[in-house]
Image (cartoon, chains in turn cyan, green):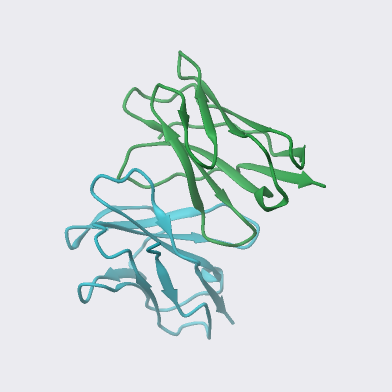
Length: 113
Length: 109
């Protein structure tokens, strides 16, 4: 069964450093999403991406964040200058044009020290 | 997005049916009721969705009241592997999912 993959599974970085989280969505999917979950808290939406542009974003997704689909398979989330409060699990998801469900990846645990 | 209300926790004995309620009185006519679950810190997993009619798949059944103000997710024969946080979400296909705190279901032997 096709699945969303994410790399790395765990990333440790120092405050102020840039990080790039990578996702490979399911191959024929057209909508892509990033969510995050701070430890012990609920899953929060960050951004959605369709037709090579951002279609929706939350107030969390400020100028420090950016997304890109650099080729036909990868979908990346970049955090330019990480803060301690960016420590969280980051989940990528994708869905097709006629699908109703979003398929989530296993997540990347980001630890900012 | 529709605001949903779920009990924070529930218990269920293994092999019995787990019935998870959700109130979504503000759901609009074009919003679906989605159910997802999250096992430990894994990525959320889609379970089922519905608009007006009751739905059933290999994982669960979804019963939606006629006025669409509430629904119940039914896991017919709960197993220990069904222990998870279950989220009821009102939304539209292709748009962001607005997760709440969900119901933490504990299936006991």
